[in-house]
Length: 83
Image (cartoon, rainbow, N blue to C red; front, side, top):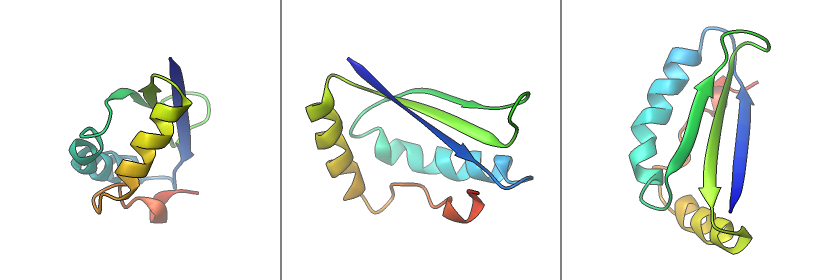
């Protein structure tokens, strides 16, 4: 079992928008694997989202990511909000 944890630092004031866009895209991504965790920061480094994906091994990760990247609805369109 491996976990991939991704942290994105967002432009101030964009957290609600990013979470909404991410949430709308999530069902498309969960066709390939389940989201293990999703957080946003309230203390410490602010304006961050953290999401965790679980895979059985690196081959599973490569397979899932390849499939997900072919989906026109994933990744969520949040690039303009990432610092």
